[in-house]
Amino acid sequence: MSLKEQKTAELSDEELIHRFQDGDIYAFDAIVNRYKDQLLNFAYRFLNNPEEAEDVVQETFLRIFRNKHAYREIAKFSTWVYTIAGNLAKTELRKRKRRKYLYLSDMGYDDKEYEIVDPSANTEKEVESVFQEKIIQRAIDELPPRFRQVILLVEIQELPYEEVSKIMRVPLGTVKSRVNRARQKLQAKLSDIMEREKKNQTARS
Image (cartoon, rainbow, N blue to C red; front, side, top):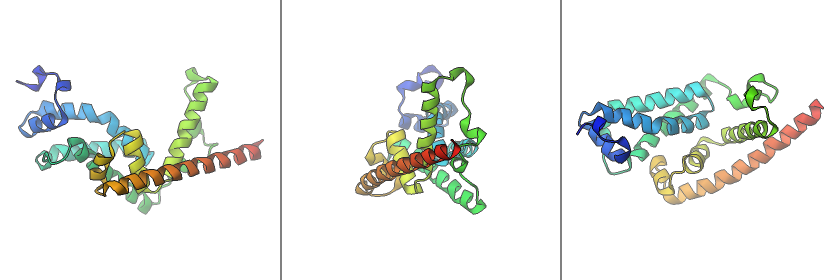
């Protein structure tokens, strides 16, 4: 039965990759459709740069396409996918440091790009929601990569600790410890950012 004749929702990730390994190109299309949004969300939050995030996701799928036979069902398919994407994102961070690029979040609060809001959504509640999201992303950006990765995988992608352990190739206890430390660091950075913002507002008033 062709994949076109069967609902992709009925197939597991592992069934899809096996079909792709057997030459069913439609299975690869189904994998892309299933993972593109969540991988883009992961990569964007890791890098806070839409162009770099798109490059990471495209390269992830390219590597899956080229190396489809490298996958063996000794781990979940999602573990393999996030391992590839995570390694690419960390490599992009190292490249960025070498090029001495600034994070998008390092731009000042007065920068026009930071303040873009949909005019049709110009309500106090929605503006506050956008502001809070920017603050949270800024705090995530300031986390060291190992803490940033674990907090995104657990809190944003909602992956179980066991799978994150395999993705990051560290013991389960290390994952739990990093999650706890990442949460503490994130809370501290959020408090620090909010305090800096209050001072900036006071200085501008």
